[in-house]
Length: 410
Image (cartoon, rainbow, N blue to C red; front, side, top):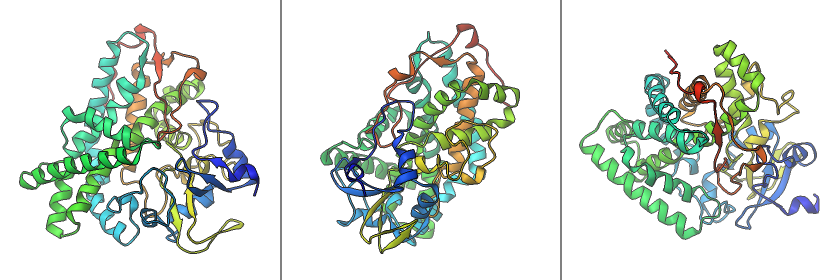
């Protein structure tokens, strides 16, 4: 392997804030399994091709639970906690996931659709009253998923600033061990209190449902319930912030595709798949450890190696998908999608994420048909060391006459 690859730092920094680093295409072609170094200084193997990424995500010989022990390289200053659903392997993961799925059935997501539209319209009303330019992250992309997950979990919206602060600290790769531990202690104490209250007086929210079902079935320990609630609070909104922000920029940069969507709104679900495929937050923040030697492509991954499968790179694999860097709302390669993962850790909130993204972006461009970037693209600031990447701000503007018409989304 090349000397350059042996010292490649991961995450790979962006030189152009609006483009995935060119190194990923080069690695897919020349070195699909590449030695990298995490910000902690620990070593890992970066996997960049679509099929190899799917294998790492689905093959049980690549363990998430092993990342909690001394054998796994540290992605952050502290190792992941064993009671997070993300840190579990089957069969423990299967047990926790089966319970969590009660709260995110397709039927429940459809029941939330009208409320998601209502929250979206409220935020767009507020945005229309502002004088452009505005930061789309602050006024729309962050508050939308945060308000939604608060309602779904039954958490007070008054605490949203606290939730945002916790998420920012725990999802920054350079946070110190003390900072990360302190945040998790605070979050777990908060969720533990909420769970105790819902146990006494359950509502119709997801945390009440999970607590009640777990108590009735004896399914989870208290620590597992609290870990699940903590995970849902962070994962339930932070990914969507990045997807909505990056997705809005993707649509703005492709006016020909926006015209197709306006002419035929039934293309929006396909557009959402493209937005997800092209804008994978952070690429991958869930490394795994090979528990035995594993053949991957033309290489053998030695037992004990920490492996990070870059979903964002796999989603742009030109060896599998034609013209993969192009945003194409008529693309028919739905089976290619790995944005939400693959295998046991397939995202619990995939259906919710798709609905949230579709309603959010469709409504945004319906309401603000002249929406455009308010600064030159090169002035945008990509957050390389945020676990999910994303833009720090996305300044947008519009013609004032285009922002006052309320659209009916029924």
